[in-house]
Length: 412
Image (cartoon, rainbow, N blue to C red; front, side, top):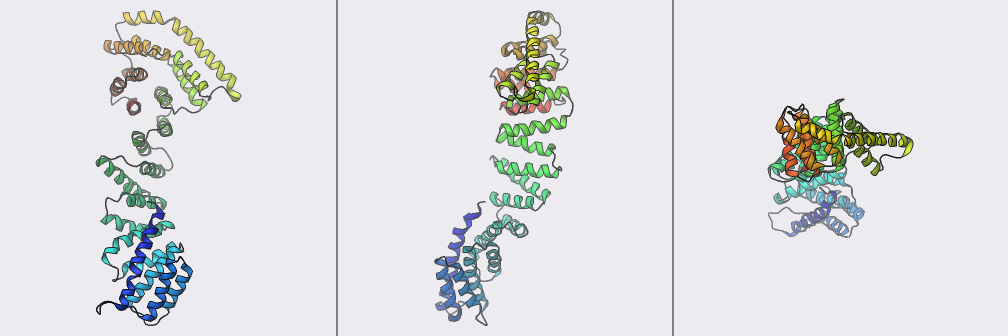
């Protein structure tokens, strides 16, 4: 909600309300009346307010307040004029307190109660008066359950007041209702829920936090979110080389590989698992991104690249023999290994053919890894439908299932 949007509304309401007291002087006999002793300084206060002479207006209000034995109706009119001058002086907290008196008055027109309540809320927002907002926002939302701006405002107040569990419930309800209505939750709602979950987990990226980041990726994908998602997942996985290798592969694909250590670790994983061509490609990408090749580590990084290229050349020279063994093999593992080699060489159509042949033969040692490799080959070959299908074939019981799901999210 935009805080400053209320003031045009507030002034318009003041004009409507405070000018009505003049009618009280000459109105019908059954209407409450304002005495001339009170009415004259109040009229002068209204005029001063209209001229933006707010201090003078308050001085005139003070004259009216000094009149002895005022009626309840006259007190109501004095408060009306006072609130307008206080708003003009940006004394928002004082204005809100006066508005509360107006709202509690039996003279407040029924058709102005709703608007006045909203103005009170927005006035208290100016000074971040959480205690008052926690009183009035739920009251408003109870009668306006679809006012998403006010609901989000309540969540922010709860967050600022360290009421984390209520803030979580408010935001989750807001997001859920939006999705049920077929709408996209606002990005700010998701960011705020991520903050709440992070705080609830003692400033850790736990499953609840990552689930919100993943939902944000679904609606608002960007490299920063991917980096948060995958960094958090990496923390949870610990020292599992297989998982981390696949995770780093995904990080490279989504543009979330940022540091020199990340590029080097992915390259070393690839080389460790027998894919030196992929290792050389990763290092080359790091140099192209200007993440590698500078500073004190420049010589070491160049030596690593040279060693991976040498191993890749050797691996490539053996490729014809590997192809023959794969075609002759009864099981599919050699075909899958060949397909991974093709991925490193950028020969994605050949990779798809080899991996699919291996999966069809069966007896693949790690079929979930083969499915991931097949999905990567299809993705790089610009065949998104087939890539999604391959990633979805990773078994629900596999340790790679989470990474496969994130690949599906990335493929779109």
